[in-house]
Length: 358
Image 1 (cartoon, rainbow, N blue to C red):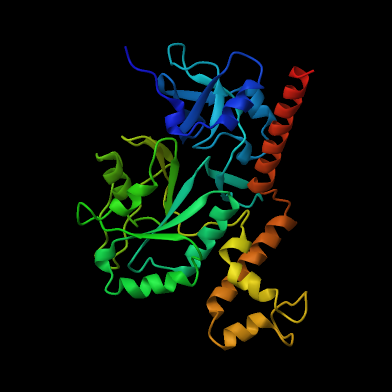
Image 2 (cartoon, rainbow, N blue to C red):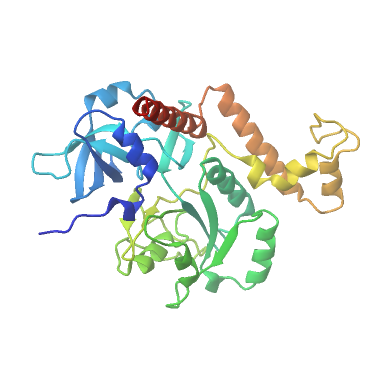
């Protein structure tokens, strides 16, 4: 007889257990591990099975973000596939997430992954290295209430790693940085300290930076397809085609995502990713300083004396403009909606406790 899967080992939290207890019906907890169009794979106590959303959930979902995403905890009607696909009846509140503006002309947001503890922002130490992209990723990860860690891959292709690390210090304020290489058996050991039972780690980054290779090393087998680096420009090729949750041998899970060179912002936390600029802005003579032609501007002074990069400041302004555009188009960020769901859920729990104590 197959042993039951411990859902706590793959990230189940007491918050989700408590929220599930408020929902009526004989439903079971499960976690979304993959999605292929309208069909999902979910992890239950009895293993991985296929599922689809209920008609009621489909009818009530007004945006793509309200459908299940990989990493979501959901309530389903069965934990096995003996009677066909399981039915997903409810998506539980997300404690963290990665989101982006959905593709196309409609102004909607898309959840890339949900309920993540740490996001490995992967970037190779070759032509893919880009500080502006790091700033964008950091803004998105902080906004999604996860913890970012920068993972630099393919260190064997870099002649001056020290210079790259110095460059990162100016943009990755207070963020851990790990250097890896796939050429040696111990070239990836630096990331193992972040892995543990119950923890979810998402891998993001451009195509070909080595995410799949790293995940294969962590799992101990070739579960993900990898593709060789092109000889003409040392860029890797796209390997992952869809998001998927994979269980690690020693506990915990990793979430691989297709390569994304540029993420269109639906929400971003610039107060953390650009805390240096925000602190400088507090020293400006005018409280509403735009950092353009105003006198006694601390930000402009920092650019003149070289303590702040003009490119970093320009990227800060660019991301600000993207956020303003998203707000004007009426995009409610995941941060706002998920926090509200959590507040509503905790309020229901408190009310239930008060009734019991009467």
